[in-house]
Image (cartoon, rainbow, N blue to C red; front, side, top):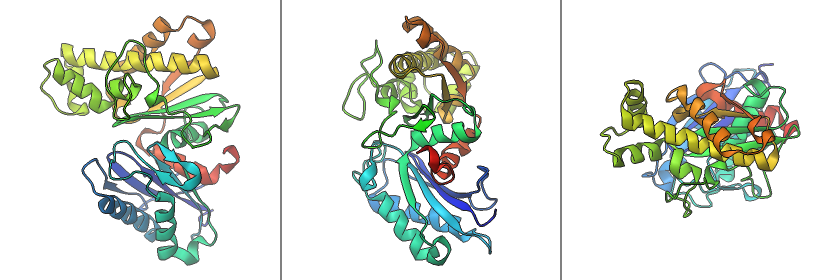
Length: 317
């Protein structure tokens, strides 16, 4: 029904988006907006970007519309119970009260249309997993890891048909699983983390260290398609590392399926072949090799659909 809408918000390392989303997981036409974030932004600038997208989405509410809940997916780590976020790629925000900020904006601009709508904050990787389980590649699967491979690498878990956020909200953070055979320094302070090896920016940085002259993940993908040896090695390296991490996580929680989205995951379909090789070469147990790894079916709307699932599929939380 048009009155039963979720306000969905996705905060990441390069952008923040908001949209109204219905009970079928469809974004309401004209309600989606985006503003940049990024490591160079101040705290006030980041807050202004959040305010801009939230107010824009609320302005698109139809005359008969009501917001039944607000879902926020945020890059981690987070402190779920306190509503605080500390995205690694947004250094101006450490223990920032994002839940409080969004609640204030919503009630300031649409108090009569949101009533007592709950505001729910979860890590973005968990939202991606919810989206795939709800309307994407993981429908009907009970034990799922959803992954985002982009500016960073995030993840979330559904086990036994229910989300597993953990006591702080950071369970499923596969980007900070250490990968055997790698020692790359990570922004989190660790070494050999999957994000430090296989994210888009880190793959670009590694390729440049080998003499490649491009600067972006998009250019790396173009060079890969053109047969450039360094670009092909960089994406192979990323895929094999992702596969090793997936194999390790599967050994721990017996995954059935991993759905992978995010901008860098679409650099080339070959990435999934490299992931498969990474799993098979480094997983000695048969039950770990049975895991299926598939692309997201939701492209770039997945994070918003997942944030809306915090409202529309709250039964899985």
